[in-house]
Length: 179
Image 1 (cartoon, rainbow, N blue to C red):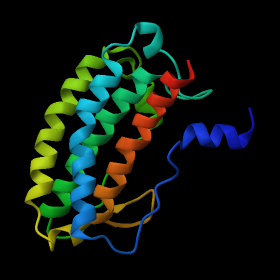
Image 2 (image 1 turned 45 degrees about the vertical axis):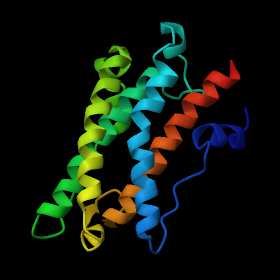
Image 3 (image 1 turned 30 degrees about the vertical axis):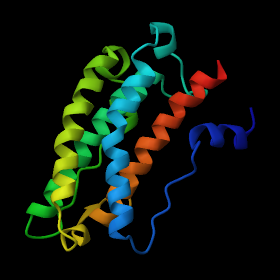
Image 4 (image 1 turned 45 degrees about the horizontal axis):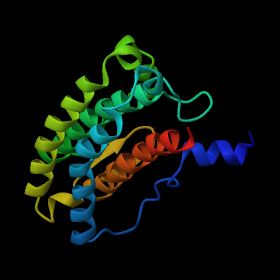
């Protein structure tokens, strides 16, 4: 498999590209994408056998199971990042976490996907309610991301997490379509 083929498997919808500005309409679309993930993901993975759940989306990539658990891990962190950005008096520095290592923990590798699907369903209900409550001024609040070495506005972050939903959903769709 060529490097280009692996890169296409790794980023099936392309890499996230931050924009200079975001509109209220694009923010609302991003929130709708986040809101839709739990149902879409549940529909995709609930009927899958253990064999399917153990299928990686690319060579040396995560399995479908690990991808589902990663979404829960990532979006828990996202929810906290949004709350910190709004509630802290200064721009907070968020904790980056070693997502690759989290995916290798025992729960990331073996827990039933139903656990993370339930978690995502509840988490996204709270997160979306919170996102929809933010005023236009609050979308300009930010947190400092140490891996990016820059501040990330909440407007950018909501688009990044909407991309994240579609990115990992595409991984799963591609696995199912290829087999």
